[in-house]
Structures are given as C-alpha cells and as structure tokens.
Amino acid sequence: MTYREFYEYGKQKLVAAGIEEAALDARLLLEYICRTDRNELIIHADRERSSIEEQFYKTVIEKRASHIPLQHITGEQEFMGLSFQVNAHVLIPRQDTEILVEEAMRYLGDGMRILDMCTGSGCILLSLLKYSNECEGVGIDISREALKIAQENAQRLQLDAVFLEGDLFLPLKNFKSERTLDTLFDMIVSNPPYIETRIIDTLMPEVRLHEPLGALDGGEDGLYFYRKIVAKAPKYMRKGAYLFLEIGCAQAQAVTILMQAAGFVQIQVLKDYAGLDRVVFGMKPV
Image (cartoon, rainbow, N blue to C red; front, side, top):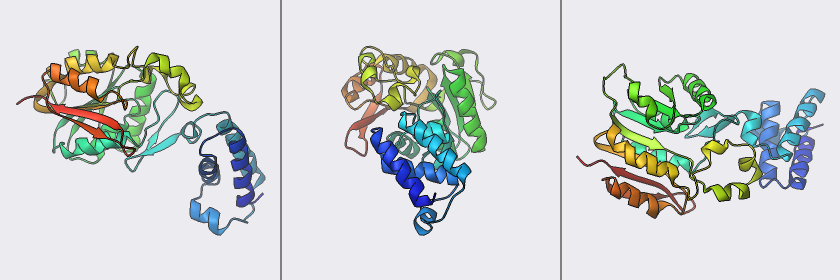
C-alpha cells in the first residue's frame, strides 16, 4: 500500500466509527507509524510502504475506531510547544489549559516557588519551569501512577521538580525544600477535577471511558475541589502571591465568590479561544 492508500483506508474506517476528526487522526497516526511528517506524505503520496507498516497502521486505526484517544495510542501530546508523555492515568493536556500557563507566566519572576495542585502529567508546572529562570516547582497529586508520568516528563524535559503524593495540601505538612525551610509559595496553579458527577456519563467515550475518573469528577456541583483549594491555599502563599485556577465554562462566578470569601483581591476571569470563561485568578493581599 502507498501513503495515499494508507490514509484513505484509515480515514474511511474512522469516519465509519463516528470519530469527529477522522481525517486528521488518520494522518497523524500515519505519521506516527511511518515516522514521517505531513510534507513527506504529500510529496511522496504514491510511495509504497512495507507490509509491517501496513499491519501496524491497521492496528492503531482499529484502536482509534474503538474511541481510544489518539494520545493514548501515540503516548504523547504537545502542550506549550513541548512534548508530554501521557497515558490512561493522567488527563490529556488540552489547548485551553495553555491560557492558564500563558497568564501565569506574566506574573512569574525569576527564582519564584510554584505549587501545582492536582498536577497530573505535570504539564502546567513543567511548562512554567521550562519558560522561567531558576524557579522551584512542587507538584502534588493523589495518584501515584500520575506522578510517575509527571516525573518521567520532568526527566524528558531535563527539569528539576519535586512531586509529592497525597490529598491536596496534606503532603506539605512534612515537606522541607532544599532552598528554604518554609512551605510558602509565590504562585499556586491548579486544573482540578471540575465536572459535575451527573454529567460524567454524557461525556465523549474518549473522555468517559479512557481518562481517569478521579481527574474529572468535581463532585455534585463541580466545585468540591475549588472549595478545598481556595480555603486552604492562603496558608501556603506568601503575601502578594497568586492563585490560578482553570474552571469549567459556567463556574467563573461561583469560583470568584469563593476567592473573595477567602480574602483574595484583584480577582480576574480569563476566556479561552472559544470565548468561554476558562481561568480565574487572584492575589493574596500584601
């Protein structure tokens, strides 16, 4: 089979399976199997490929047709221009989350201490460390398997970060940094679980069946983790430190009220590329 025949086969299979971006996924999986890029596929569309590549391509197309996420097949996802390893134990990094990172970078100074709550793959924390100078990063997650992925991503990116296992702020009780004896941070960032429990069953199969439930379910009203994080965060923040939270598109008002009640000031809401509320952040008073 040629590149063109591979692609047409894959696209037809994915269209028949109801995959939303069938043409794109068929191409990306072809690039993955043949270790090539889009230009190669276009310029040499009639180039014959090996039977082994054909077998592998059909196998991954069948996986994608069963609604296994593309990123779980390739094992990686790009985020903030960096490649992150992902699997079924972590949320797949999404473009909307880049809004949080880009805004946080505007308030991030050299040598600051960053805490990433519910770190998952580590994509938020590691991106901030990659694009800053001499910052210290701590990531916390309740999932040991997620932290393994975060640590592997740190090693791949040659970044030094500390990852702690436990429920929200609990791991900080006995944590002492090599740089400082306190547990105060200049910035706390988090993309916590925020989907209402009753909505989980209505999500796309790729999300509902293949991404970790613990990273999705935000409780009955989706605000469970925001209440916990916002209430306890000030204890671990220096004066003038910032708290950045990714939110569901209908949660801006509720999270803003929580932050106001906890004493945060200069609270702002940011929209994503679709014009939907996506990030709420504010400062601990000086």
